[in-house]
Amino acid sequence: MVSSELISTLKALSRSDQFYIMQILLSELAQQETHLIKSEQSYPVWSPYGADEAADTMFKVLQASKSQAVYP
Image (cartoon, rainbow, N blue to C red; front, side, top):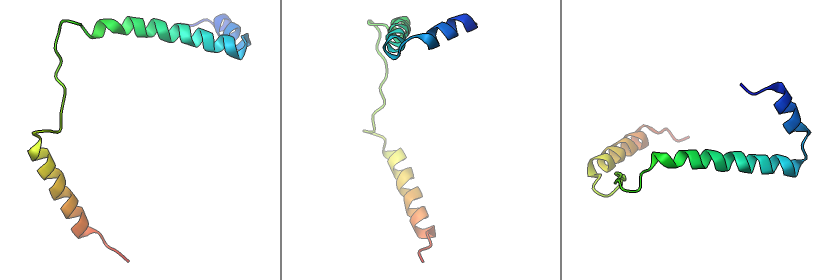
């Protein structure tokens, strides 16, 4: 848990110092996230190509919504 003393110290800093602290913290968080993606492993990537069934379903839903639409 973050101490109230630390919070008050951070609030007392100038705007530029607060941004600098944020930059440091975000950089640290980004470095900690690098272990999630391994360089020697492949990962699947979704593509809309070959998704004919999904496209057909979306087309049917669009057609149904057009037929139910009421225009003044």
